Image (cartoon, rainbow, N blue to C red; front, side):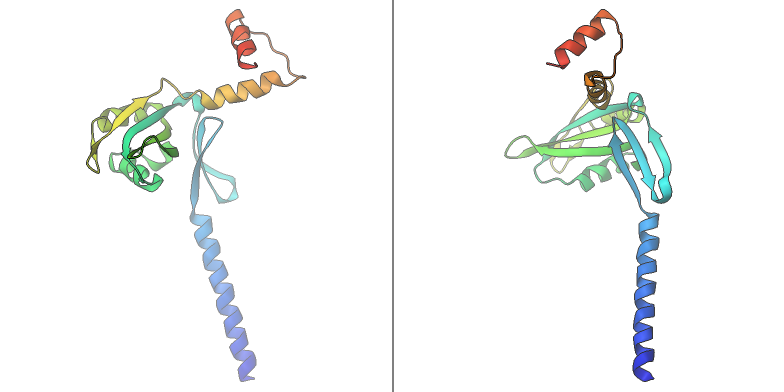
Length: 170
């Protein structure tokens, strides 16, 4: 009887541990860029935040020290007042032996404001340089290319749009 009771206690602890992991996973939220839009979601198809692609901009943060992490870039943005749900660090790439550059998709209004605050800001002994695109059209252009190339899809546009499509399909 003692061995069976001990085994049952071990199984109960394992079940409680699995329930705890489930609760932690359910509490997590994930932010991603989907076709140029910033989508924040969590368990059960809960979408607490969606910023449409036409309401976003792309920030290029230059002169970052080599080895800086996405978490450090996120912390820098949050420290300067940016809501974590209003931006997404797309990636960081090495641009020289000593420097890297981050690409961030952001809510357009907040992104432009933050870029003005961070441009010239000293971060880890380096002065940052921040460029802002007029709008985030990268995801939309990619979507349009896929739609227009599909053989069953036809659409008429202005002469400029048709010329742009012919050039982009080459």
